[in-house]
Image (cartoon, rainbow, N blue to C red):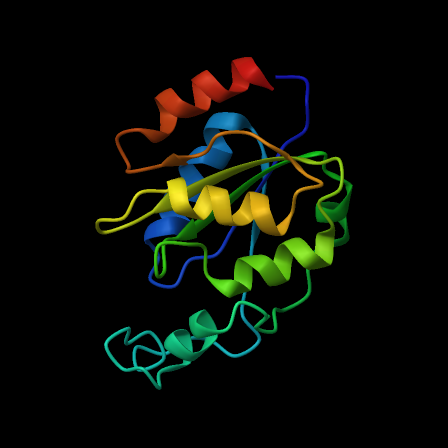
Length: 158
């Protein structure tokens, strides 16, 4: 593949990170982890607790959790695969922080997600509504068995 691709991802439990690593290898792409300034604890991730950090963040669409520095090289990519676990049927707000910082205008962006039961469709629509200036490519909910075949399919489209 002659186009340079970035695989950026947020992973709260390690599941999305494993998928991102496999995708990055399959696409021969640079990989960037979206790291929160304050790591999420298991208590923060308790979606049953309306006062948990993740619940509070997801209740306010304007919330942008702080993230650690993004490598300078990440800003230069025109094609970005953005990975995340599905939270409340959409992307975690920390993904929006990343996209706000790198800018999306004119970039080709392909979402991929992991989930225990939700699809990616609502997250895709949500991202497209927040960042209409990007060139969105239909994303996919991925499991370990689907990464390589999807990467092969996507590399033909890039």
